[in-house]
Figure 1 (cartoon, helix red, strand yellow):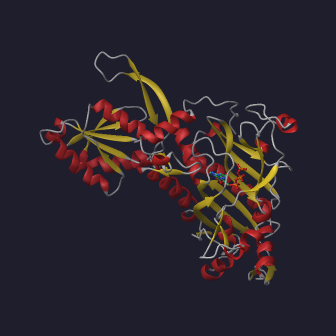
Figure 2 (cartoon, helix red, strand yellow):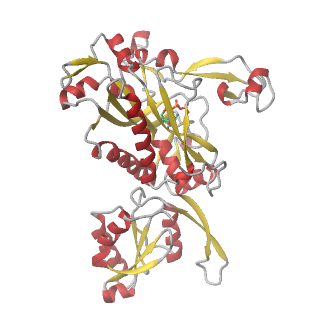
Figure 3 (cartoon, protein in one colour):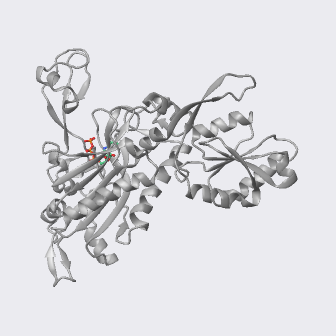
Length: 458
Ligand code: ATP
């Protein structure tokens, strides 16, 4: 394992990431024209591409590469008893304190303990209220009558949709233990403090996988899943010295968990949770058995019909939080020679996404609009479109166009010039090194595929 970093030394700040995300169409504030909606964000043209690719990488890792894991897309609205069984109605609370003077609101576990003990506001020294419990679930009503019988919750996690379907999936898909169910979807939490851009929001997306195992084998599977999830981030090309494990101590461990580790990432604001790997024991299925009255035991036909409630190993990652991590991880600035003649050095902002995650894989740029270069470039783009996500840009100086693509994280640019007309070659320009090579346009698609496959982060 690499040595752990003690402080963030990257070039990103939350301000820079937030402003680049807006400038380039990754993420916008929700309902911005009305002053914005706290805790909610909109994903723009590049943001949705990036989010889809992160989701696809996770989905492939979980389902396509594992014969024993299948997918599910459960509803956001679930029977309210689900949340009684899961413990969310009773326990899914944060401790809340308010400042009587400046009206600021804090999570009691996120302010210095000495302030909490002295009931002193960390911002204005005003008096704090007593700590009270605040349930994070969004509650609404279903149907025309707004009475207690019509209460329904927006799911605060995707996991419960998996547990309530576990028997359906065993029966319909002939799954045998050990096996897993993967799901990506929206979750909602009425978070008290939403700061740091999209890190903690009220509406977000999760990528969760629940792996059902025989009791007694859970510790082995827990260790295996921890390793697999670590390797996954390595495969994505994430800076591994920015990742570490954090084991939950007795005070942090959820009421259902036997053991829990977080994978933490070193964001510009410090080490924060990215994903949790939990040994949830047989808590969930036992509770759903109790609350639904349905027998959720597994019948092991390969072991003399032995019956048991499976243990569950969960890997729970935030999709939108992963997107923030990928943006921070990719962000770089470097000094380069100015593209203006006689100009001084310039700062180049570049997102060094893995090419398989980049929203645009290849941009095609004609050197000039005239003399048939634009048409030739459009033809090349058309050919690449079937296999790659492409962009086309013909406005402004070529250097400026490269910089725009660098900021969007586009790993490859193809420039079409007069030589292209004469001999069918184009310039292939690499985002990370800014190197340029001449490639025959007939070989372009194969070359790009090879570059994507063999990509190594500098
Ligand atoms: P915390 O203690 O920070 O509130 P948690 O430990 O309750 O978070 P989990 O319930 O384990 O988080 O959620 C699993 C994953 O879902 C987290 O690792 C995170 O990536 C993501 N997640 C949880 N809450 C949010 C949120 N409000 N906004 C964005 N992502 C979230």
